[in-house]
Structures are given as structure tokens and as C-alpha cells.
Length: 267
Image 1: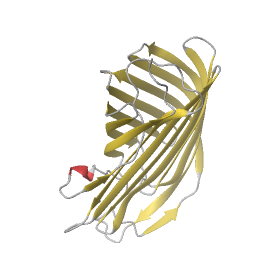
Image 2: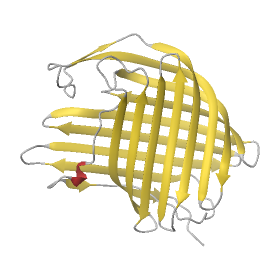
Image 3: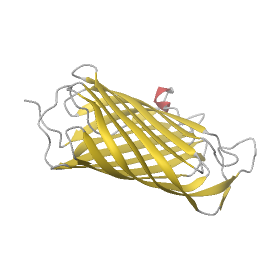
């Protein structure tokens, strides 16, 4: 779990630095050739009576070759306040889908996370299973998957100089790596509200003997141009059995600029 970083873009005197990637229109254009996708980023610098820095970046890319679809996900979060780093997380994911019907597919995926504040050195899971396009219209898309796999993780003990201030970590004691079998389920929802406004929500649940981990990312993007959009997002990370000294739930609110690359042009 990461520490909760509320977007300081709302704080007076904060300077929002953003760079980014794309938003799609309601109509489905011809498919792009090669990799296409979205990149987004946002950053805040506050200097004065209190210094604060926060930044986040994401990359989501898709490549379709025949009946195969490959999806790449990368995300990074960093936060620092009053000279203390209080958030640092890197997450990555890869999924390959093979369509064996108009709406059904089989998938294989790899998901991992390296969070300096959730009580784990790392968490990695490999899964496979079946997916189905529950809704696949021009304006609404809902895809679900069910699968099983193998998870590897390494807990760690976070040391604090002041027990009442858990945001300042002064040391780390890695534990033994463990592994278990997991069941996985996911939902990917996309809704075009208007030609320039799109809502997305992605849910991933992985449950095994060690714990149940839930990640949900919700966002609303409004196009400023065909390639640029402004996105407001809200993410939640939950662990049913967090390591000692850490919380079970983390929340993240972001305001980002989004930019799309190699996106098909509308007719």
C-alpha cells in the first residue's frame, strides 16, 4: 500500500507541472497500426512556509496483432513533504490476450509492485485464465476476467524514529520471501459520456493464503484537443492482512494531463 497523496494542485501557491497522454472519442475509429495508448503525468511543487513535492506518471499501451492483444501498464508515484519522503511506488503489468471467439479470450498476465511504504519489499503475481467482453458497444465497454496463478512477495519491517510519525521511515528489515497460489478477478469498464468526456474504472482482485489484495482506479477524462485531455482520478489499494505498522487501505487522488500516441484519426 502506498501512502495517501492528495493532489496538492489544489493548494495555494502550488505549481502544477504536467506532461502526458490521450483520450478517445465516443466513436470507435479504425484500429491503429502498432502500439497505441495513453500516457499521463502530474506534478506539484509547493515552496514557502512548508515545502512539498508530489508527482505521478502512468503509461498504458496496447498492441493488436491478429487475434492477439498485448497490454502494457507502468505507473510511478513519488511524494515528499517537509524534507521527508512519504510515498514512493512503482507498479508494472503485462497481459496477453488470445481471442477464441467474438467476445471470449484466454489471457496470461504478470503484475508487480514495489512500494517503499506498504510493508513489502515487492509483490509479484503471474496469472492465467479466461476473459469475456460483457458489453462491447460504441459508447460502453465492460470486460471481465477470472483466473488463477502464483504470487511471490517479501515482507519487511519499517522502522520509525518516532512511533507516532509513521511517514518518516528510518530503516527497513527485510523478511523472508514467501509464495502462494492466488485466484484473480478483474473488471475493466469504459463509458463515453459525451464525445469529449470519458469515464473509466479498473478493478483487480487477487486472493490467496497470504492475503487478499484489491486495487481500483477510477478516472474521468475531458478532451481539450483530439490528443490532449485533462483527467481527474481516484485510486484505492486494500490489503486484508497488512504487515505490522502499516494500514490496510491507501487512497490516491490525482489531477493529470493525458496525451494519446498513435491514436487512430476519426473519419
